[in-house]
Amino acid sequence: MRSKVWYEMMQIKYGEVYLSLYLDFQKDLKRYIKIATLVFSGSGVFGWAFWEPLAWFACIIIALIQLIGLIENQIVRSDSELEEISVLRSMYLKYLNKLEELWYDCENDYKKEKKIKKVFFSLRETDFAAIERLDDKLNIKHWKRLKSKADIRTREYFNNF
Image (tube, rainbow, N blue to C red; front, side):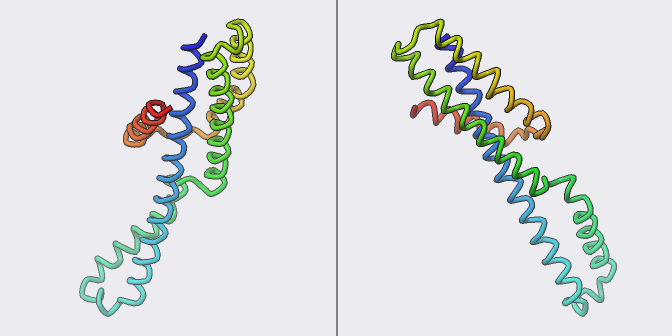
């Protein structure tokens, strides 16, 4: 049971770290899109004298910015979705704390195997089931680069644990 609790703890920590990285990525992406929209829209209006010889180029840039503005919600999560992802991350953290406590009890023989098993599966039925429901609803995309970073940070956490 000890190894099962340990493995679950590692998976949950990885999920929490991934969500943290994913939130940062989404917020940065949203910020970059807004800045690019402001810069190019402003340069299109205020720099028309500069763009006049290349009017077709200016039109293409402005059209691209408008297109990005229209599909932004398909690329970047909305503020309400980001808030739900933050809630999901806090659910991961609460579940992780409970697992760490259970693992500590298991590691130090404070509870018997049968009691640990009962608590573990009770946590999975309640806390983890709620996490899975919200996670399925949000349908979070898994990016290779973020997965790699999350794996490294999770390993660092448990190596220092």
